[in-house]
Image (cartoon, rainbow, N blue to C red; front, side):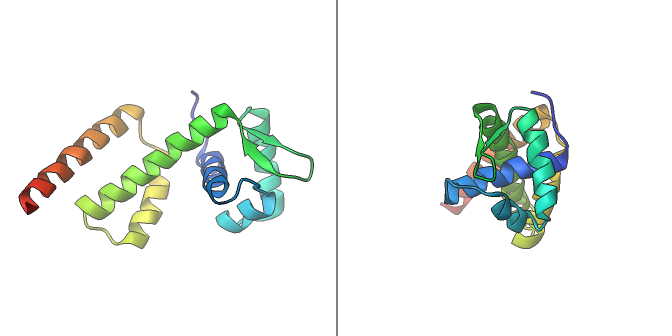
Length: 132
């Protein structure tokens, strides 16, 4: 899967999160979530649609395709892992961890993510054992 730019990944991730709340995702929902204009969302949806990541009804709802959902879930899982690492291992406050995770999720290789996932799992298991 070819990597997209950070902006496109953020749009996909936002659609995924919004779909979990309400299956009818509209451009105005995405604009509000990302604090961008509706024309910016419209342009991004065109790019995502051309890439095959979304279906968009004319002036209607936006849905992730199977490949769009897979890509969005990958980006979102990176975000969750980074935020958890920052908060639980490095003891960064939640707001800073959220902001940093949002940037970090876009620029790290799959190999590094795999190693981080293993490290975090082992570190948290050791921490749990010490607390018992």
